[in-house]
Length: 272
Ligand SMILES: Nc1ncnc2c1ncn2[C@@H]1O[C@H](COP(=O)(O)OP(=O)(O)OP(=O)(O)O)[C@@H](O)[C@H]1O
Image (cartoon, rainbow, N blue to C red; front, side, top):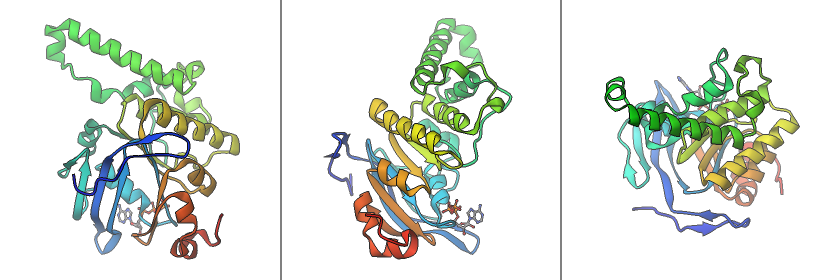
């Protein structure tokens, strides 16, 4: 495949593989507004990749392109070595891309367990008809779905609140339930839109640990948007910096922190 980068091992010993997602010359317009201007970057298998930049830079637009909420007017999206045609979000989800939202999007009246279960919808293949004909298959699917959900609930340490309606939970836990729902889909690529927004220090520490553990334990590739620079620089293997729809930096946290254009546009002062 073109533009495939070399697999590498991170400083903390994690194996990073070949290119999973390759965004080529993406341009996205809303009427006269160019939210994304001719941006290319890739995400390698196993990486934690951050997208940062000032308000209105185009970060959410980019995440929405990856997840199929918007189809760009120009450019190509490649996933797992194949060019992806324009798709609807549910089709993208079926390819193995799951996401969380900037403003939590859970069913407040439903229990934690039921909310996490909705993350399995893409794995529920047995139609009503086949369920009637092949009871065994439907039962096997149901068991698999339950097991996957229980694994995630254990992993994210939310057993104690599994029966609680989500509307009753504090903000930090809601964010964790949203992560659980995305993980229940067993994605290849997990997209997190401001996972720490509105959290206190302790909640941020918890969320950081869970993100690292998910990446480590399940080998999930993660792309995230985040405003908390400390968190971004600690978590990420590589960082893309956007400004006014353009890409102005791309590299390791160290490289990005010392990139003069990035310092001028966003960071203000060198953070090293
Ligand atoms: N649905 C839309 N319709 C019209 N313009 C939009 C739409 N979504 C985003 N934009 C515009 O595109 C540009 C990029 O917005 P976007 O939300 O992607 O930025 P962002 O970097 O995620 O900002 P923030 O950090 O504030 O969330 C902005 O000028 C915004 O007003």
